[in-house]
Image (cartoon, rainbow, N blue to C red; front, side, top):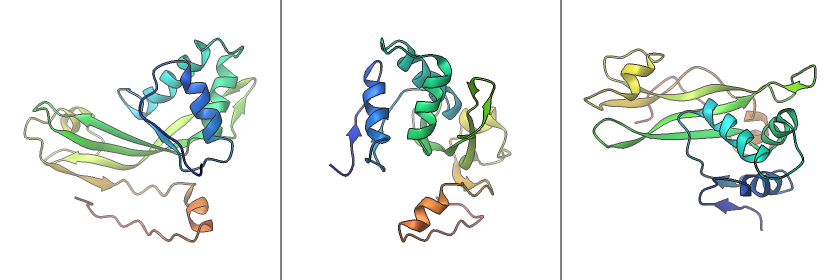
Length: 162
């Protein structure tokens, strides 16, 4: 198959999904429960380490880094409404400090509640009124070269998407 879509990973199957994503199935997707894009990396690392695969944290992070470009984070607001909270890039894929792989996350788009600053997470994600939009943060992801190499053009604009 060209793409693989796995509904939800919770454990050892994370290894199989990440290996498939890293072996010619680019554009594949899966879902994982996490509190934020940064937490996703930690959750996946834990799943890999608990899988029984003879691995260590650095190897697990390298597997994650070589498999994932973009994280789409959905969430539920206080009133129960589900929304897109963030679209983020997994960063520092080639940065190694000693034997440790360093991974980071950079937001490309982020939910902004009305009357809240874009970096004010408490007011954004826990806003009672639940009014807001997903906005471009000004960051252009490094994976845009991959997108352009496939003949797709996407120009980010500093305006709301909602």
